[in-house]
Image (cartoon, rainbow, N blue to C red; front, side):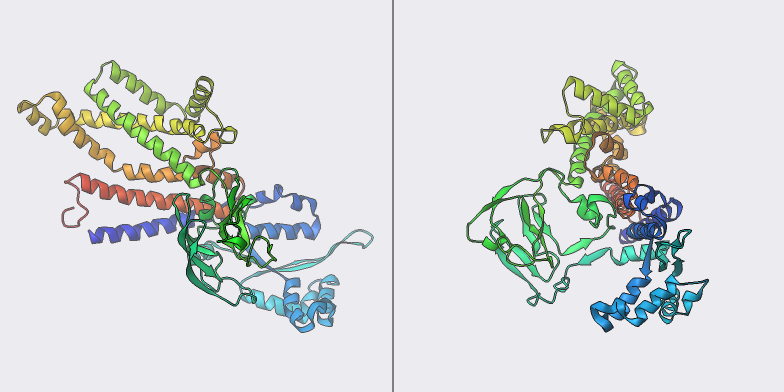
Length: 522
């Protein structure tokens, strides 16, 4: 048993690394990265060297490379020496003149330029020089630029991914000389009437706290980093944190401001003060009593992962409740009317493209039952979940019907069934006590997978119905070239798939006495 689990864990880690390397290579090496430039308004407005610099900014933002600008190199070198007027120093002016008045490679003769090139070539960076651009009359259209560019390879990205995979908050996270009282302590939280773990010097103020939102106990001590978003409103947010953001509208409640905490004085506010993080900017003393003043709004609705899970788990349960009994009934009534109708439905589900029957279910639901088609147009908090659940559950039920019927019929001619008949058992008893149990063995292995895959969401279904879930995250990320989130979501999918297979093996070994995870028994 121990050997099995060790092999499984090692193979799972290996599989995860292979998937990560493959996806990273596909995204950063085979996809045309210039496509991200065409939709950038700033890039399209700029010209000459400024446009090239904007391209490097975007490539760095999307994780293709890192670069060092020579001007920042000069600033870091001479500002500590000359102060705010560093740009007027003789050394700084001489270096800029070397670039501006360059002929051929004369700019390399400047000592600062030579030092910059030598340092970054030693790091393996590529030196890029963009000479000034002039018009026919000699007027300067674009100033010269000198860059050291580091094109990131697959192994650098993989190493960075695993190096930053888990992060722990410490009392030294905040870099602010004004913060002198650092530590972690437990105090009573009047908002929840429960104790809370409070940090000072940590990124978040509330490290462990309780509230009325699932999962009711929240922590900000350990953070799993699957890669940060590089685009849109989610820019800079880690994939896991983005999955856990609520998708409903902001709402206001009567609550105490941090300044008034414990006094009983309440104010209407949409802010969720449990999400407070440290901010070096000045804070409003009428609301806050320290620099933990950066907070998110209270939002209704479920999280993205919650939306996918609710739809997925209900559709999975419905599929088993519908599919298994009907598959059993079809086997009992083989070649009768019930079996023919069931087979017709199975063939229909298998033959018709998924997108077609999703729209068919949507049309029936919206016209006959007045159900909302899109989440954004739904006024009721329950109704928008119905059509996506039906679109997932009914096809899955068809698959279970097919396999249950097949396994039941396969078992009918087994020796143990013939023996049971010879003992005088009725066909109903044989089906319910013997055949159905053995037929279910083949379906047990997939139960953990069906449950865990509910967390992943259904890409096509969520896209069609506008569900703010995990499945839709992947398509949105691919469309927006949100590379960090694509990798994060893919790793999340892979990890759940691996876990579901391991749990399926364990459940099968528990249910079927013929299967053992021990190396001695097979």
